[in-house]
Length: 289
Image (tube, rainbow, N blue to C red; front, top):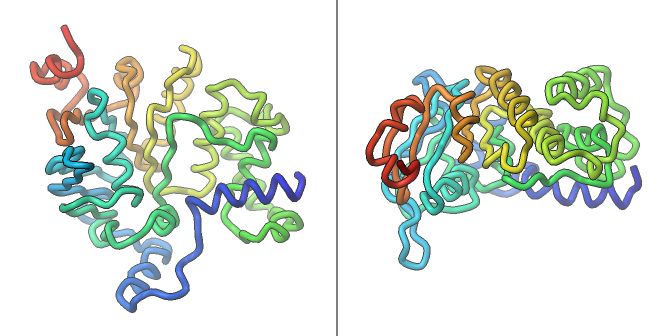
């Protein structure tokens, strides 16, 4: 791996992973320290993510309208709905990219996400995958995962740092999980679309996130890749909490126990896929007849 490629890789990773701020107010600094201590995420009340009466408007248009959402630890929740329903804006709010006008957003029972920026939220264990894969194409599969590993962030340190046995084991584990062990030395740019998606998911998993938000993960995949992605998500269920925004109803039916339907920025219906598919309101605004 050349120093130039390492530099580019670190610049991109630093957009979502950054060290704690050096100067903060006492309350905020204390709160930030708490969430970085192992085992401090409070899920004793049966929720890992909680939104209540969240509203946000853009130029007079209310994109999110009194949205309330409750996600349990280890749950695999699917979010569906028509274009413009607020699905992406909801994820923007959770990850700190967009600030709501009103409402509450909590990670666990005690961490107010509205008091933290994007980098802090990512460091707490919230990972987000966008629809288009953003892997480092000139680097190998292994090097992409290596870059995503937690540890020294300086370029020189990364260039000369030797992986520990534990880190090697973790990389091997993730490579097996995303079914790319045989492609480990292949440049990421030569992977298929589905393989690039799995690699990016692996780059999130290598950081051991508590919550993953995935935006249309099977868009553009072949039927075989879609099935393998479903198997991967079902394997992750329980070990991680997943929120999946998707339009492929076959894929949703394969993985979801509970489905939330958004429309005009709020929850229209919620339940099993069969329940929401039978809801006349959902048929009218999204599924069609």
